[in-house]
Image 1 (spheres, rainbow, N blue to C red):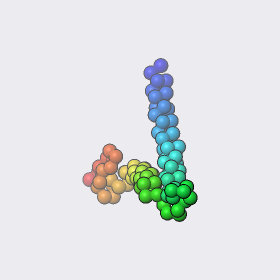
Image 2 (image 1 turned 135 degrees about the horizontal axis):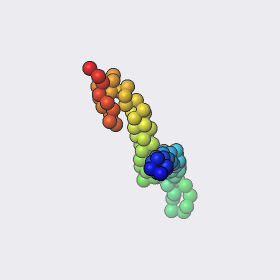
Image 3 (image 1 turned 60 degrees about the vertical axis):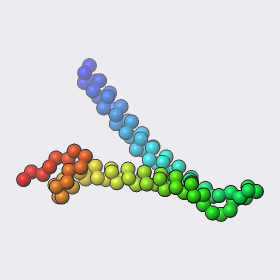
Image 4 (image 1 turned 120 degrees about the vertical axis):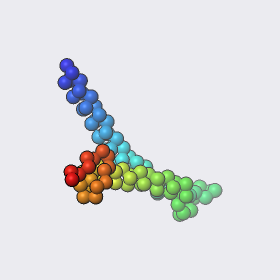
Length: 98
């Protein structure tokens, strides 16, 4: 029964991470696109053609989150190579043997 519980727990963790990264990052990116396209509106309700500065700031924040997550993922995948090549341990990589 212990093995089943360990497998179920691991499967739950993998599913949660897959949902966060597989659906969460594209969702954050689409929110950024939506805010990127917002225009300021004049008093009469007509769009002015200029971008809304607050919405633009939110869009840049969303894009920055996505870029940082992708960069962290690449560094996590390459952690052993970075540790071996540059002697910098990221994400708990083992130091190179000397």
